[in-house]
Length: 424
Ligand code: GDP
Image 1: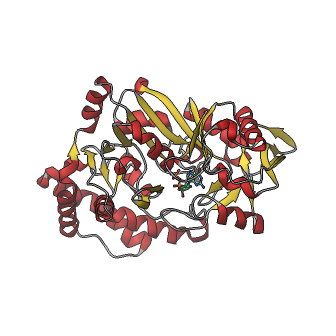
Image 2: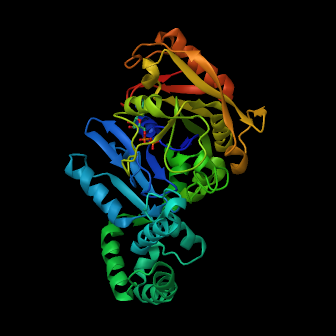
Image 3: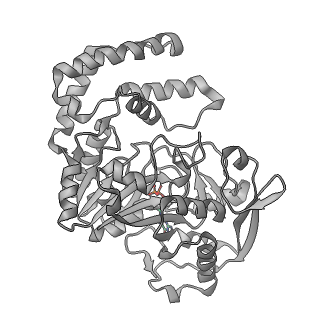
């Protein structure tokens, strides 16, 4: 049984918490895309953790955590993350890293910084983790797979070739210090020592696990609207955020993914630039930001304040469809308990016409939200375990959203903890 946990929105939907909750019954948890540019915040018995590279399942003794081939692997970040959790009392997790995963090179991070600097006001709001330069190089076929660390002669020769190109850009476009092959080679040899205990053919491992009937969770990063094909291009991330890509980024047959749990947040938040139709500002936004998530809506990696908005039925309906949703996990609902009335975006007005279909970027930039106001429930719903015990107005909010998006909400998350979940 393979389940994917993915986001319907702009990321930060609470996927980490849902994966952590579902990990109880999982044998293997796989990261299949993205890199250390986004993070998951997880609260459990060991404390509060922000993970950027490790899958959320590392806190359970019984699970194996896999970094799939689709991931942008930052080896020192992985190494530090393992050390940090072990130092804080978490038992050493079982971790496997795909020998086909590609390595985030030190210069990917530099190029990310230099490019943001060059673009200045027109930048994409990159987290400067090297993700866009990394995926560019991967598809330009000048990336480095983990397996290449084990062929030292070949590695050095390829480095020499690739560095020529990088240095032209450094010298003439960015006017920055040049790269040195020996230095990079030595850094990669250090990376090899760090990653060596974990490297294997994870696709073969997963294939065998599927045949043995193991429970496997694929953990996505960010959400549908950040997908390079189906999101708000170009304000997207550089690897596919969709469950379908889970098959590629983990190296498993697509037909083995039989449950797609799309995580949807009860209000909206986004980081970085790009159209955000239901965005709110001023005091209204500040209050939601302060009360949001677990300790406020600030980026897990960057600490940046997130942009806030009301729930967007148009974006979420689309986000769920493009994921191939079988189940919706509706999260952070408890946060809305302070509001007398809750506006929800039910349509987009574009050039005088109202639509409920999510448009391409140029049209999206022109969209104005059509809002409908629902009644708030004005109580703290944390601690409630049964759907029927939720306040009536709260159930009405859930059922309204469910009808608008057209996918079944089977889980409601009413707090940041593992046990704060209501199954429907
Ligand atoms: P992810 O990247 O999708 O995993 O999302 P983040 O970790 O960035 O953001 C989710 C935030 O909301 C984290 O701080 C979680 O601890 C918190 N969170 C998740 N589910 C809930 C919930 O149901 N209620 C509350 N109050 N916080 C939640």
